[in-house]
Image 1 (spheres, rainbow over the protein chains, first blue to last red):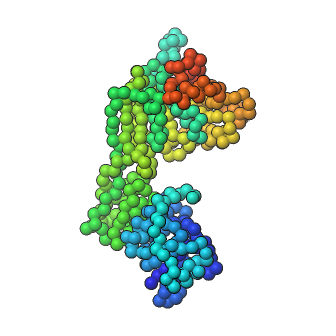
Image 2: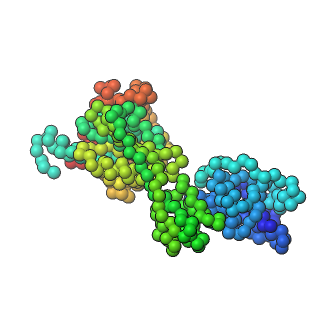
Image 3: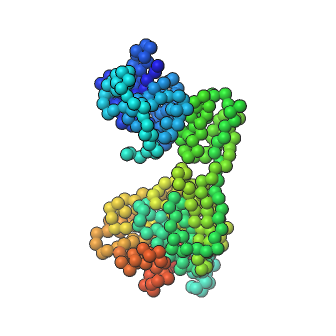
Length: 121
Length: 293
């Protein structure tokens, strides 16, 4: 399966990014090949609809699982339609979240927020 | 313009003008100024283009109301014809479309440009009506009151402002346009047709900063303008300094006055409650007439 995590930097020590839709990169981990790659999030600079475009990027990368601290409604609509399951990540290094998920320690994300619509929280 | 005696000259120059009232910063007094000007000018109409939060009607409490819905066109996908090429998704700069085995349309994000219907190679996208708000027209004594109301969650009030302006074009008398705050697309749409722009400012640094933004906007659109300095308390006034530095016509200085604030706070119209303010707004009209003649 393919797991995605929004991250601040494109290296292994990176923290998980608190924003899903406007994260600079997504860490993509393939459990079959055990390879890690980083995809630039071109949605980050959108004036609006960043969550939708970010979700489209994950759908296009055939992601199955998303680990994120939070997620807005519009993004969730696309992710759910694309059959991507969303789990709640903690504000720690991305690799820590990844290992926790693989051990079955993360819960599904239940609280989808209405969206920041381009504003900071 | 025909030069007759003074009285007739004034009437001719104020025959039909569109006067926009804007400010940049919210809360400086656009609605107070717009409502009072519309009230004092015989036969004038008031139009509220601050469609996200219209409030002029709270002062006028107009009667004989008639409503008109404003709909825009948003994309409708024919799933039979769609091949999943995603040209529409790639095209949409507002990210209102996504493809997950089928095209998803996010109506509240769509900016109704119609572009996706053009780029679809299979002609699978048509347009369907989507209501974004309404225009309500009524009367307060002899003043026509036109207010735009944008639905909560709708992305842009511009189509409503455009519809209001279609109505304004039909008016035979002067129309006062109460603009939204800021200097955004909605403000630009609100002042496009205006003959004169009144910029309302207050004596704060933030007020002066916003005055600069709207002044540059009206200059860009080549509009005649003048400034009303509101809430003047005789002290430091960075907005006044800005006007003096840039040689901008100051058409009035309204004091920071608890009597005016009470009248406004109670939803009343100053020119109807106070001879002093009746005089203030009559003077403002005269200043504008001088520029427009």
